[in-house]
Length: 234
Length: 292
Figure 1 (cartoon, rainbow over the protein chains, first blue to last red):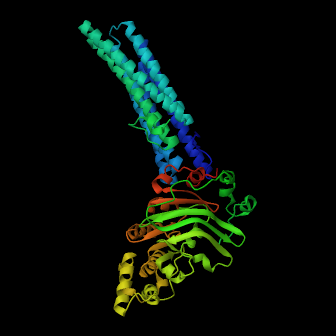
Figure 2: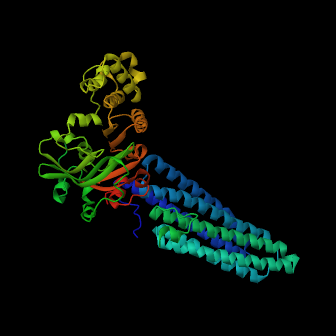
Figure 3: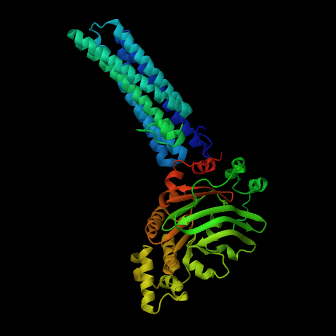
């Protein structure tokens, strides 16, 4: 499968504009990745200072979304992109929406850490969250990588991995419920841990969405709400 | 008439449009046939293995394509790709060009367009043409429209001619603008109005197919929008094949799009597919403005 080419337009300026947009999406992705890792870290290490930084950095993600959106609108208005170029712009607009939401989920982790500051939670729960967090970070990383290289195989493989995240989330929830039933005094903290797990699970879903946009970008096929393997006949 | 179309690499490199074609020549070498579905059910016009030569030079290579009833099909491609040549072959406009030779099968409702018994004048009444530059006759608006019906004997009396003139102008969306000055010269109209006059003139002889060669390239955006709107309305009654350099125009007005490159029909498909997800690299390169 050949990856679509961004460059090669008669208008070199157009090449530059598209390259610029792609680079910005990638640096926004890097920023978001960092936010998610920070979110997991601040929870696991109970670092409220880190949590505060994470929360204050969210506006950078939001600003990038607005900036890239604006550039996409300019390209739609001035270049009337078609075919691969059109798919790139559409995929970018959708991708950055998901990235921004991932940023919001990461911010949520930071806020929960600030609330948890005064609580006592067993260390085994932290470890559980760390494991789920690592899994989600890896998926996010791979989905951005698939986006950068517009690689369908990578995107498909990453989508599969989201199933693991969901399974991990389910088992964590079961564990939390058990804790709560055994000792109602843990409900308050266990609920917060569940919200964190929920946020991480949502991040996995957003990363999966990004992979779906990569497939659309590369092949022009919409695999949302379908079984991608069947759809693409792989 | 552009006769520099050729598959010879050296010669095409010397042509004025070499920037677009040069870089793509290597892709064309592996060309094995048109991508996409060339057939339609119950075609209005059907062409198979059409080759067109201008003297020694071949302008169209083995093009096969059906044009469906009441559809607008757009032909796009870089200059010299043969799209106009192909269009002109459909109503024998190439007959008058010395040295032009056409091979292959071209049929209109199953009738051979190039049959001995086919009268080109009658054919062109059935398959009308609108050109890039509006070319009204140096006569009154009224006579521009009335001329065709008169020579083809489509009206028995003056009242019938009046009616044809009025309905044709109405269909072309021009009647309201000119109804008070039907006797003034057609050349006195604005560019967009002249083009609509030419469309009205084409419609007046009750054609089945309308061929349009860059009908809006000399017009401003407003006049272009009016023509495009008109094309959409005309589709109800006619089959329309349009050659255009404006890809946005092709995307707006047509249901199917055919992409030509150096005399070869590279790809044909639904317009919605061609402009979002073309299958051939050359099509992709052309519509995204790349030279590969």
